[in-house]
Length: 280
Image (cartoon, rainbow, N blue to C red; front, top):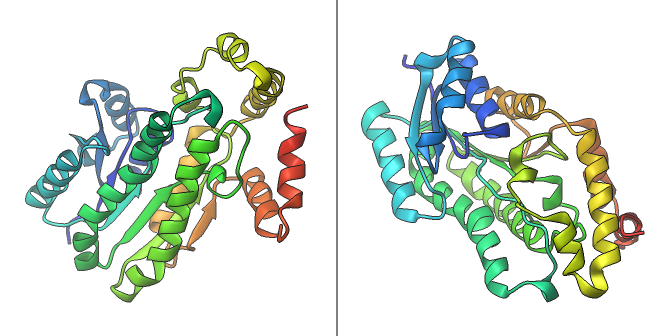
């Protein structure tokens, strides 16, 4: 039999790059997608160093462009003849609060982090049904716990979690397993790509300036002790190869503890007490 085929989004850096290499190392023919294939060299070098360059198929896919998604999935089926798994990994961070930004800013965050996931999932599901395959979506602990100055980002990740939790039993009835995977802080380019000028943001935050300063200081400390992209990706690959994957997976003990605070917090006080402390 031919090797199973997995499509991974957002593979130019960070967790996505490590997932693509790890999946190939586990024997999957890996369709590694990214918006700009001109940034693929680091991924190709990592795959070659791991001895799995021959299992890597790099393709362009922009999750916010439905035509791009449909074309990529169609090409995968034309070339490989099967699609056994998808890992929705592409996403973008965002720091801000509603009074200081526009609704269009929030909508843009939703387009990448929520609707992008939907575009890929919708295009892939018929093929995953045919394969009895699996759908993995990298969300975040921010998809469970709302965090200060992450309103739009957490809203998008909450939406993904709710969508996938609702989809899971429906997809399972047709033979497709659905899992959300929740990293905590990960030492990757994801945070840098937010593009926040710290001092300018604080200066422009008005009444929210002191709280934003405290939040950014706390975040810097959290990311100083962050999980490596390789460790986070290992949890994703383990789920990809698990014969009976769980519907929800955290990538580290810290992530499990953080998510557990919310899942046991019936009145919401534990979470809001915790996150309020970040702003002092």
